[in-house]
Length: 385
Image (cartoon, rainbow, N blue to C red):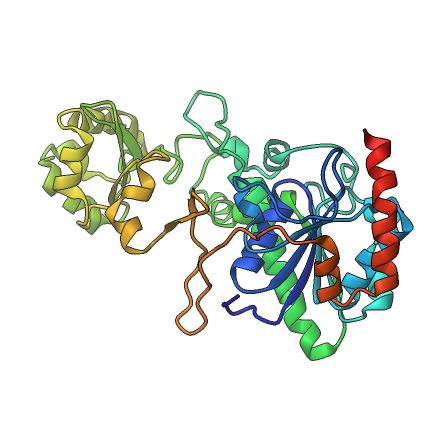
């Protein structure tokens, strides 16, 4: 693998959502990542590899270890012995009960960075409660702020909690700790909670609110669709465009290109006028199709873009020029980001199936542990069938 993280070794315990996405980010950047999953009924525990549609599993092999068996735990510990980073996404206490908690791992590998991804965090009144992205962003203030005025909050996919507030902060946290460990020689635990990350993503809005520039009423503020110059609008063909002309010079350019000479639009930041101006702006965009607006506005300083669906986005000329999307094993997917001038990431690949024992041996797991692990596999699979 190419990329700036060549030489970094990561053990990822497979879970849902943000932890695998974090593993993908590290692997995309060249880290050598190995995914550990528990054997599944009917699956061949000796073969690695994942479904080609599981895009977040790209660029790294998967092995099956039965962590309920001593041999599986022993194999995992020997992998951890040579790792720089461990990431896991289970509820607090699960890894400790398996004998794979941070205390046990750091005792064996003092330089280890142990990344823990949870929704509520490792401590607090809700730490052991079940939850999902929507719950975590709800207590951060983010969910309340997203939506139209007078309507219910809008669920922003699972981007704010799982991926923005979760996986991205876990990746940032473990790399910060790994950088420090290379200087101090000491590892540590990184407690990445989606509630914390989602709250931190709201930093600018909390600053606006403290300054009296942001209200608790969603859909009535500068960046939440309240302003007529920062919103989406339907076109004559039923498709949508996005406008973000905040700065006065960009707002002036938008008006010029759209032919908006109504003096009511002069008071750009008078929020009391925004509801009326939104209605008038909506009328303007109904006069042309989305493609016609693209011809007129795209590439200008009017801060314009068409709202593209999942099929259209990969075909946009800008995305194609930057190779923002790639196809791997017949599956279209986003390319690694960001870009590096000297140590660029390699094109993503789906790891080919490889015998589990070969992967363990390559990472330095002892033959006796590999043999004990191999002997324990049939018993587990028979119990599940």
